[in-house]
Each structure stands twice: as structure tokens, then as C-alpha cells.
Image (cartoon, rainbow, N blue to C red; front, side):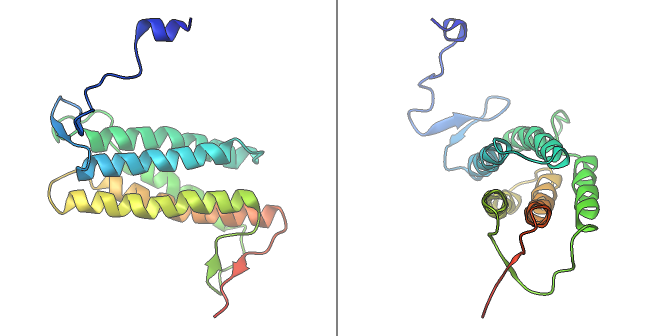
Length: 185
């Protein structure tokens, strides 16, 4: 028998009524915008996990591993309604890291002169899936911001992450000598 199973069970039955807990104990419906937002952030993390199961250049792998860890911080930030609690919050430095990676990777890419469709290498396509999930996560976060105060850096990070994933997908294609897929009207 698994030792972890002896210590805890994966099911608690506390969510069977469609209610779940935020950090600090507040109970909310599972349809609450916070739950939707950090659930979508978790989905981004899972999509990146698929990408990480492939053979990647070391620099791309390192970026994605850091992003996966950052996404846990975002989930924690979104799950914590206590704005006075400064632990596990998204910071401007986290956003700056993404911007630095975008600038570094973009410097090796040709300028964009047309709309690019998701595609090319399978790995680039998987990265585009993670990027498109980011767009939904950002909308979920904006829905929270319409009703309550949260750390605005969560939304900015996810917006910037979408940009970085786009650049990483282009980088993967470029390094494999695969042209970006142009949108044809």
C-alpha cells in the first residue's frame, strides 16, 4: 500500500455540494470566478506539462519549468481573498522575467509580416494550445477584477505569458527550420 495513501486520502467529500474553500477558509461555489480563474491557470500548467514531456532545448525547458512554478503562485494568489496577506503573490519581477525572455527569444526571430496560425511542429502546436488557454485565464481574471480587488499582477502575468508562449512556439519552429504558418485570407 502506498505510504502517501496511509497519510491522507485524495477525496475529502467537502466539495460534493458544489462548494469549495479559498485560502483562509471562506467557502464559495465552484462556479465562483476565482475558482474558474485558478482552474484555468491549472489547465495552462497541465498543457505546459505536456510540452515538457517532449524533447526541448535546455533554455526553453528551463523557462517552462519556471513558468510552471510561477503558475502555482498565481493559483495561490487567486485563491487568497485576503489582500493584506502578502505571501505567495505575483510580483512585477515575475512579469519582468517573462518580458526578458520574450526579448531574448524574439531577437533571433524574423519580424512578423503576416498573421500566424497555430501550427508547424507538433510541439509548437502544443505550445499554442497553452497560449490559447492563457487567453481564457486572462478573461477569467478580468471577471474577478470587475467585482473585487485582487492583485492586478495576476492578469498582467497571464497576458505576458500568452505573448511569451507565442514567441516560444515560433522559436521551436524556427530552430527546427519550420516556417510559421501564414493565415491566408
